[in-house]
Length: 420
Ligand SMILES: Cc1ncc(COP(=O)(O)O)c(C=O)c1O
Image 1 (cartoon, helix red, strand yellow):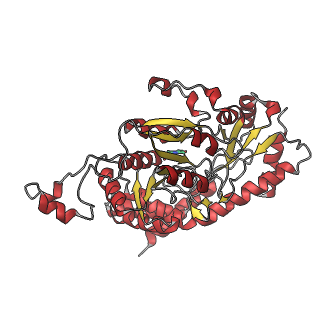
Image 2 (cartoon, rainbow, N blue to C red):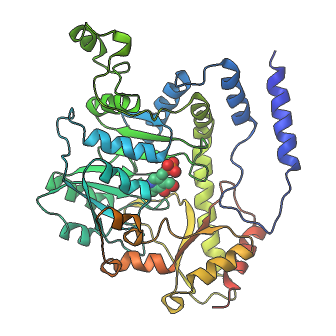
Image 3 (tube, protein in one colour):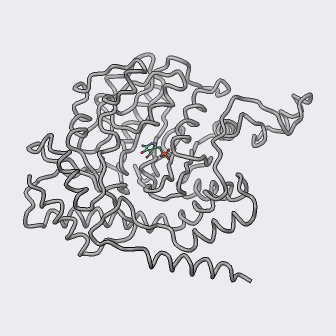
């Protein structure tokens, strides 16, 4: 009967139990798979159906319903999700589409593949400063940068914290801008009681390994209209007509072409595999619990640090924007200004104490050398909020299981034993 499932589960549990545990190590993320994920993957492999099929469709359906979006399209990474969202927004078949040369507002603290699709579509990124205390876009600076060429804005929700969505959506409405939300770091966070990623025309998510839920590699784009849903599905798979709602109409219109191989748009191949969707289905069931544990760990760690005998405001903790409920991705902070420029020493110290750490995303992105090659030579000092984050920001992992008091106390002790 289902003996193989029991066998696989037992073997997985045996391997997990025998993995060496080092209490002195604090990795970016804990173990989020259990036997259910392993059995689901084996089931797909043994079915022989590896390419996109019913698991992907099912995962898209439950994901859309989880975040409250009308449509969801799964892809092979969060980067592909960003690429597809911009490709759809700039596609010649979209009624209201972006044109070559249009300006797109983007926060200076973002990820590389938040920016590259803007260039790849022939659009121009206009960097906007961020508020260092929320890590997210500064609305005042954003409004100043709107010109007659501004046609879209990309909100990049950083480390689980939301961009100020209410103000941002009001500005977008007033100026007729298309809003894309890069929600790759913020699955589960809310603004105005609504999931991030569902406020704008498109929302993108990443299921890379340390993110709120994981499929190893994987991503999702959600959208609000049938028009965008059709475009995303078509662009995901070669520009094919196969998944379009008006497929029959198209087949009739182009009856001289084999209907099985009818290409009606330009496109990519960024399809996910069934294995990723099977993992996604298992992980999504646990997402709420993992997220509430992340929030618990965030609050408990702030408490442990602030009640430690060595606490002397060595850090500033990041704040949620008004009206938002973050599910933190990492435990992040800024070194107090007094310790400006000591961040690298601090991070090296954390690593030597076994605490895996990162800068805040990629720091002030206008400092990244690739931009110069692309014709943008911006002055970092014109982005003082992003500079503060670049020089003083850090994060460590937030685990999906509740931390014990011993773990919390050790982490607080490690943080505050640095020689400030
Ligand atoms: C804000 C943001 N956007 C996009 C991505 C890209 O996602 P992926 O690694 O799944 O391609 C990441 C990756 O961490 C990210 O942090």
